[in-house]
Image 1 (cartoon, one colour):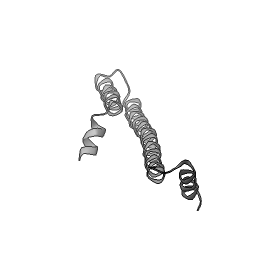
Image 2 (spheres, rainbow, N blue to C red):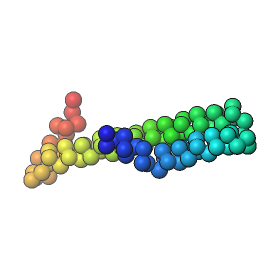
Image 3 (cartoon, rainbow, N blue to C red):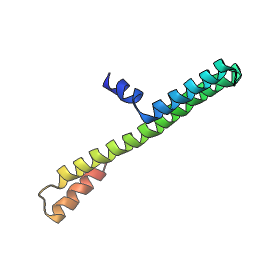
Length: 94
């Protein structure tokens, strides 16, 4: 539930929602044909999904880097340089 609340309160979602509402208001007032309003709403949704996907990729990369840093720190903690180098080599070898 927290994730949904976070997504719905994000700037990306608010901008997409505002774009969709603006398109519907323009269609209701007659300033925009309904077919174009529907395309605008779908476009806003598509842009939101793409932007959220790009943000999630960045988060995933950050998580991987953080986990790798923890693993390296744990493997080399308190060891002499030669021992630390051997521990790092052991992490890299399959």
